[in-house]
Image (cartoon, rainbow over all chains, first blue to last red; front, side):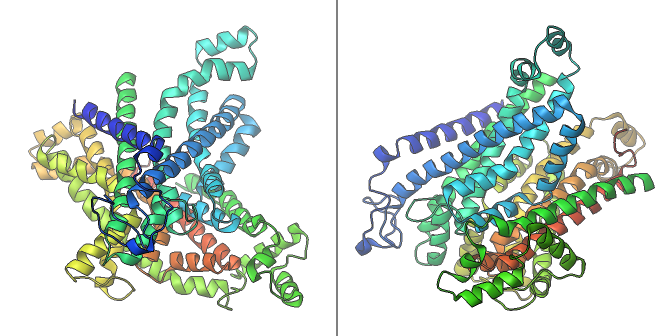
Length: 268
Length: 307
């Protein structure tokens, strides 16, 4: 029961976040990039519920629009990484031999780097932008999916329904796509949930270091970085974007935990 | 054990070569002319040519690669453009600070995780257990680039207990170590709790109780020992995350380690230095993982590479 309520809490957080991102133009009381230097560093008030930043921009609006960036990075990283991981993991698991060796050694090399370090290095070299952040995160992200898919494909390969499909003359692509991948959807969904949390956290870290989304586009990590200079006089600058990231990661982790528990229970 | 060691070393060297190759190609990924990016468009042609020659960019890629490997063999990572010194010297000078921070964060994580994890499993389904779970959920969700500023507000600005930044004695180390170690502590707490709960109803635990051992001895000597293996593996994997996480923590607390040096190098477009920092962190991560794998084999001799 406890697990179910935690899962529901996570789901509610994520739905609220998705709603905030989708309806940001309607919910934001002010334009998030509009500057008003007469209102710089205003504390939370009726006019500006979350206060204003050093350029007088409304923080509530920036947090709401920042949700769009975080979700965009999270979803696109997960979609691209998952696609690459499923294709390469299937090739590796189904064909084995040299294909398997080559892909697994490539994964070993990529996993020899602490994830965020590789992302930092790539965005530093390619230049800071949203596209490069997604690219850098996908570069490492696909490895987790590929390992998962390879393992599952190796197990499924010995199952009768796969032998039957082979005997009926199914091509490898058809067997993998029509018969094997549907069996992997649940573990992939769990991996994607945690992967999205990781991607959002990594985007925040990169933007915090000035390597992610560039101003004036609102991003939670960059807002935290800007707010750090005003910790003493305006702590609200860091409080709201920090809370937003934390709640998002919490929601994703709770949903991921709930899905994993369900899968484990079904397996027993 | 010898067979395991040789198999593990066989896997280590290709990974090391892969890491070196990937790091070598970083500089070639710079869009446009890397020399122009580093020096700026206004730099004179002779200046650009001199740097191109120094970096070996005039030569074919395979010659550059061989030169890079040869340099590494004698500990030469090139020269920093901004600091005008050897990259290896600069990185080695900052390494002790990063190692100090990483080890302190690890100590914080281990201390918190073992005490909370054991308590949570012992007092399963009580408020102690719920508090530990709440801490682990929050710790995993809290980004270190937010936790750091929060700790500064609380302990440095409000109470004035601890210094805001810099490296010095123990007082300087507490906040950065807490910032860096919290997520790892949260992860390990969950892990220790669940592995203890997995084994606590096993027959050998009942036998230990039947022998008349005290409950504390049963938990610490018998149950905990079996949960050490996954925890050790996670410790090794997390060490790399700590090294990489140090980039952010060092930036927040102006800690003079490799992480801060990396960010300074990125800001000044000092790519040979970025390359050197990334390489040293990645090689450390590889070596620590090798060490952890061997340690796991010592803890559990059943571990082997599948035949």
